[in-house]
Length: 222
Image 1 (tube, helix red, strand yellow):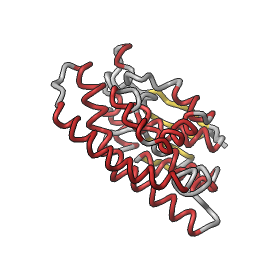
Image 2: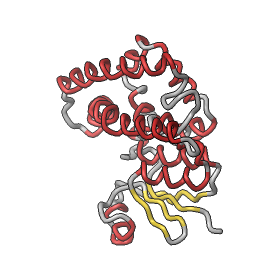
Image 3: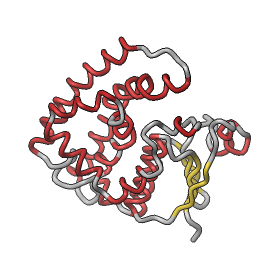
Image 4: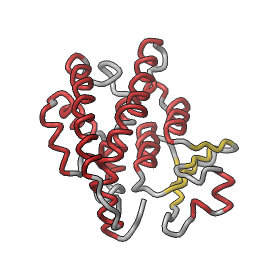
């Protein structure tokens, strides 16, 4: 059986979500590096894989997938369904809830902070400090919900690590490289959860390919 192929650049937070899932699953895969600067994602061969011209893309035999959460779910269903709460309707439902919370609540709040604090300064764009401040305040309110959840559960879906936790890694990794990372100090259960996530071998391996400056320090753009 041929290994799965993953197309993209390793510094991308969306790519990181897929790579952590692959590592957690112990799946055999080949990383096919692409260059954003070189416009690889706009080339016809990549548009044939993903008509939106985005990364990551996964090829698994005759199946081609895009959208990082969909890719990660496929990998885990195939290789490690326990991380999706398989076998328990209640556990799988809670995994789904917190995957959606990450997608629709947390990521939209973290993204403007990461973009303005890390990306915009490197590419010479203006920093919208008002948007950053507004997003940080929204984040504090959101972290109150996480703190309440994690005060009664070790992990987001319950007392077991799952994709609900792992999916948060992608943008949290870069947020924690900004000056606003100190916000977590006010939420001890969230901070402990994040520390436990960072200690996982899969996360450590993927972090090694995710420079905290999005790779801008070496002249690469995600």
